[in-house]
Structures are given as C-alpha cells and as structure tokens.
Image 1 (cartoon, rainbow, N blue to C red):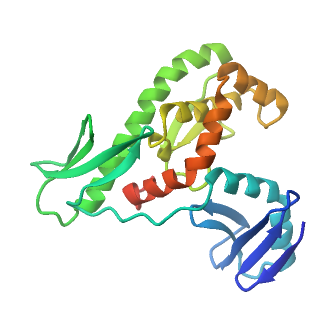
Image 2: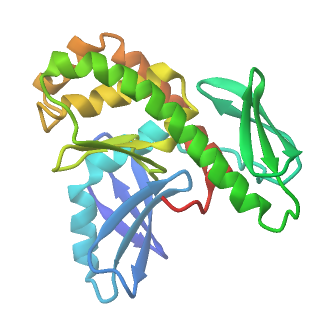
Image 3: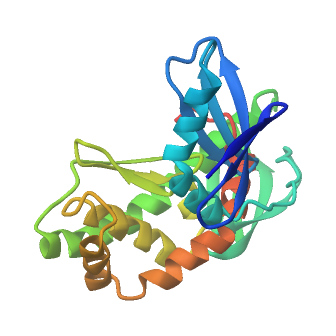
Length: 256
C-alpha cells in the first residue's frame, strides 16, 4: 500500500488494487485521529500539528476496513431534492416506495396509511420543518423497535445471551454495532430497508455477543441463525448509499 498527498486529499492504494481518495482535515478541537465515511465519501480528521506520517500510518492500519465500508455503501448517489413543507414526495419505507404528503391539524402528528405517511402540522408553520423531521424520526424508530422486539423473543433463547439495551439513531457509515457493555446500536435508515435486511443486521450484532470478531466461527453463527444472510448483506451493499441519503433528507439535524 502507498499514500501520497494531493492538495487536501490523500490517495490510498489497497492490497486489492483499489485507489481510495480520502479527504484530510485538521481540526482545532480534535484530540485523536478519526476516520469517517458518509454518502459523500471518506474523511480523516486529526489534531492540528499531526505529522503526515502519523496520518499515513493510521490510514494503512484501517485500509481494509475503509475499503469494505466504501464497498458496502456503494457511494455513487445522485443528489436528492430537499424535504419541503407542503410538497409531497416519495421515499423508501420498509423496502417499498411510499408517498409522503402534508395536512393541517390542531396538533403535530403522523398518520400512516396504505400508501405511505401524512405529516399533520398545525399553523403557524414557522417551525414546521423541524417538527416534521422529529415526527418522521420517531415513527421510523417505532417501526424498527416493533420488528426487533419480535425477533429478539425468538433469537435470545437460541443464543442464550441478550443485549443489555437497544439504541436506534442515524449512523454515518455503519448499519449496526455492539459496544463493550453489550448494547446494540442500529442505524435509523434500516427502517427504509426491507425488514429482512434489518433482521440481518440485528442477527449480525447479536452474534457478536458470542464472537467479538469476524472469524469463520462468527459467520458460522450467523449462518446458523439466518441462512439467507448473504442476500441481505449484498442488498445493503447495493442500496446502502441511497438509504442513508434518503434518511439525511428526511431527518437531518434531528438530535440523536
């Protein structure tokens, strides 16, 4: 592998032969090197004064992870039109295209129907957009929790282990994670994916309760619980970028 500087970018050549461009950014409040991936690409952030050799070494150590995550996100996405109050639009919901429209009412709420969702917003509309985003985030989270609670009831007895808690929030690059306290985090964008894809991510993180790495033993555990996992992983790799971009426009700026 080799890196060379090119303006504000680093170019990283991986073992697999890929050439990855990483935006580099010194940040006055950064306390450590940090690598992030979004639908716009990869970025490495580091404290002011960090030696370029440290940045290069950091990227070399994370090259395989970076290549995998960029592949999963399939980072070629056309810009999406912004969410605008009063203007209907379409968006993916549980793997199907749904309509999002608007109505007026005495209090803010979201109405689910066969064709999609209606955002009911009272007048005046001065804060309509943040209210709408909050309603959408809460609704998407409730859909995920409904599915997950049903699946946990089936998988926990099989594993003999259970997560200590579940957190659902927008995640820039990952679909899920398991922390050192056995808490599962899931990306809110999974509410836009088919339920089978959400199920795969849940099973993936549950299996980390037994095996904390991605060894053959781990994948054997995933196979045992969910034989069709490869299809769902591939679906997320193909459609991941658009799902995360759709979530950004729906719930952008909603605090997690």
